[in-house]
Length: 391
View 1: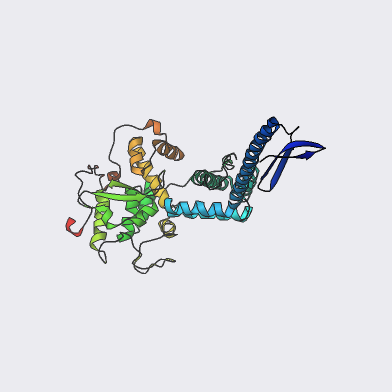
View 2 (view 1 turned 135 degrees about the horizontal axis):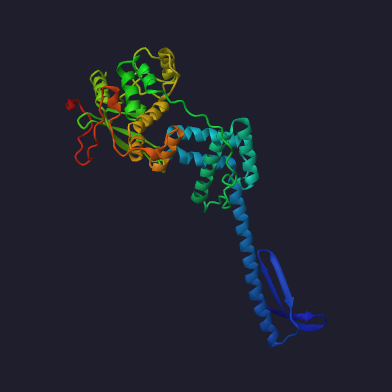
């Protein structure tokens, strides 16, 4: 409250305020009622001003502290935690290496607020120089994704809300090497060398245009002999969630899988298992495959053809469908792309023009002289997946 005392030999009103250890005072002209009211008004306004200044300072300090808590290591840890629940094992593994390189290069305790476009460009430049433009672009894609995700997810926990520094860096020139795709005759030459499980695996890769991981995850509950169809699961989706697709099963593939079913060692479980005298690192007899590294390559050498892998067989399936006259929509359904544009890009990378496809659908795999593609049946009337009673 204002007080009245002597100042320079004259009785005057004085306003005085102290907030958070900060004091201010003001002397009025005299000891009149008007000066008393003015002192009161000044104290109220000054107190409010000091309280506002100190609140803003405290908020700024808190924000700085929260920003400082976001280091490159914390950023990477949070992003990988999200990736583990959303991405496939292969994608998550790729991101682990990206963040390991990033943290080792920049430093684990560097405040994320210090990672601006210059820092992002310096890191990506080093990757382009040491590895390749393709590799730098992969790191850029993954780091940009993580930044966008964390910015939204942790907007109330102090994550920097400025522009994404990785998206501000221009993509690097890429020197893409076309994946080798075998001719149908080369595939048949390799197929002729195998039998039993290995033959069924290669036929499934071609007739379903399946990814390697999809084949290794395949279980007998995914094989519907009654409805002549096979169910594949993938996390190759926009959201990273699991997606299931039923695909028609050719007669040739049906026969191979049926023989595999009848000769299985135990009930249910995975279709393709480590068995026999085959030795695979970190894999065990009776367990599903994790990988089959070098297996196809060795077969190709034995068959006298240029080596190819599982994904090349997927490409071969797309080429066979294309030349048989399938529409882009049909090839998209077979490859299980969510977007038709992805299928068109896929075909163009194979040197094919998706704009010149005929609408008429012809049989493709039966032209190999054996199986026939069986039409999709509606899910409403579809039979249950294979059981021992299916025969």
